[in-house]
Image (cartoon, rainbow, N blue to C red; front, top):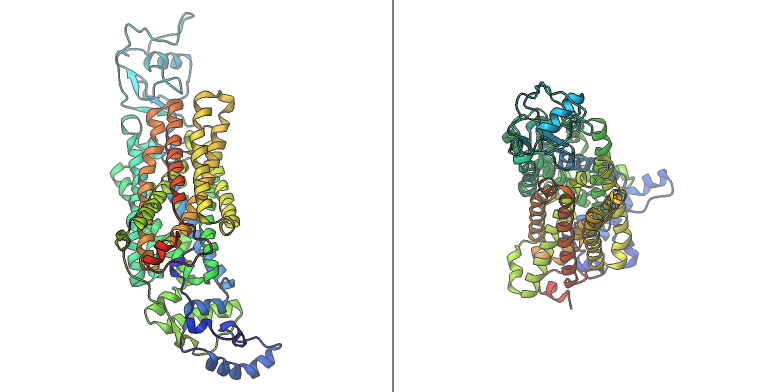
Length: 590
């Protein structure tokens, strides 16, 4: 997947004859251990003399085993970071959830959402204006409600208050919440409802803003100080910030902590992704990328039952934060990237890691082979190099728009599951399951039908199904509201697959001279989409009613359709040589 890191074999290496065993760096294994011990020195001498003066790191990976036992162990550990990253990014679906609520009765110090008696029901009916969907207004109480303690029910009492005396309303000063789904949330503790409802979007936005900043900072620092140190610092910040959220009772503090949670998630995922790409062979990187994304979806599948079990938001937040504490042991289990070590001239340390990999994978490398390793310099450049041609400017704008829309729709649908109807826990669980199905679908079709039709098709599926939800929401009866959930889940399947595929597609469209900066800019655009997403997702709470459910889904759907159709203007990259220069990129569409 991370194709910009794949290095080609030198031309003189590719012309070697078949008798050189296809440039294998690992001498053939003997039939018996005794014979191997006798012939080992002779084989190594013959092997070393047969090799060119330089070999690439990818050549060593191929001979070590592109996806051997050691790489699988490391990738499993790195994948668990994706699980935690997903949990802390999407946990706000539950911790910032909005239960049904109304104003607390002015005359009742211990008011509750549930009706405690007939007298309590009368107080509610005569104090709270009617509203939807709970039957009561969520944000207003009648102004002229006084001295209602002595009201008693009579046979002729009705639900509606006297319109001549109780028309004027005022905003709530206190609230009571329905605790049947959530015992408590950040929303209920800080009263982030009504005129403070936008605060929830601000909190979710801060996670994505932190993710944007964290991805840039961690990307730069990991190139300078190494992948492992940045990963370990991020783990510490991740645990500390997630734990601190549990005890916050001020919104401003919560905003700051959310920022650090988002930044630390990027600090986990960015080094983990790069280390994974640098540990496996060239032919396995694409599937490794899909595998890591699958761990993200596993995080969703695990979070749903955990949230169902822990209905207090502080218990849920504390538990998920504590589950990340074992990651501190990664200092002893995760090695530094050998490619980074070699790029910094630290060949002795790289040799230790490579030797360990060879031992676990059951292969033997000849002594001194690392002295011949050449690490290809990463091509420099910036995206402005492509601005000299209208063709490339158009392509890159389409790519960047696709990243914004993919992120916008993905996170929007993820945060919006609570408004679809039915159980939020079941909806969230299904959302994670359909992502896993989507990744399997992409793996099977990516190299069969091509990047462009797959990416476009998945975005169109997401767009059409999300837009179609308007019909069951607005025109169908309660018996067909399950159709809204089904359509939204199909949309989630489409956008999750599209989001994964755009990584491959865009990395193959950017020429080598600007690939790193192009992918970096794409990552920034994805975070921008994520920053916008919570405001659209929470429109449902602002608008209310059936329209509140439909509007966010229609926005996600229409934007996905537009971006998906624009992808058809891009050239196909399947079975095409990666463009190296600007001219190569222009000719890609011919």
